[in-house]
Amino acid sequence: MQRLMTTGAPSTRNRTAGFRTIRFTGKTLLLAAGILTGSTLAQAQNGKIGPAAPVTYDNKYEAYGGINYMNFQAGQDLPKRMNFAGAEASLTYWTPVSRLGVTGDYRFEGGTTPVFPSPGSSNPARQLVYMNLGMAGVTYRGPKGHYAAIDYHALIGAADGIFNGPASYNVGLYTNRTKPIGAFGGSLDYNYSKNIAVRLSPDLIIEHFGTEYREFFAISGGLIYRFGKL
Image (cartoon, rainbow, N blue to C red; front, side, top):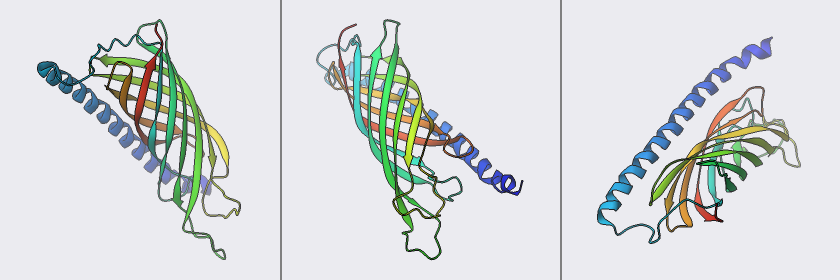
């Protein structure tokens, strides 16, 4: 009972942080929609910037590769969050159903986290942790035009976290484990040509490595390549 009482306060803080993350992600997507609308109108007037060939979005597949950032908490009782950096790759199959796609996504994250001091040991104040994420879900194509498009996605899967190195210290980290994870967000795709676009994609990350679900923020940027014909 005492354990439950002591962990209650961090839970309230985490929910508050999660709501802030949701609001931040929502504002990011609204800003992206504004950028899409404004840039399309401006470029349509001068007719000089953008892909030479018409962008028809009639491709069957879409491959994405880029770099990403994600914040995280590598132990349920650690007082500070950490920053992950890594890479992301995904493939989307656009179904015959209008605007609906099926997406598979892989991400690798790595970074160092502050930990509790361990009496009687020489462990560093920060330790390296990393994670492999595999997810799948649906993508919906929102507003689209010759110059840019906005997509929305909902992905769920599992994350395999490596938190303890060869020398395992009691410093507040999770043990090595695989747990459910989800990514919910969207992307702004700015077309370079009919088949190539630059993508910026923010996400709300929901994970369950501890005893409760927690929310974090992630964002990635890179290139997409469209190919195949519906």
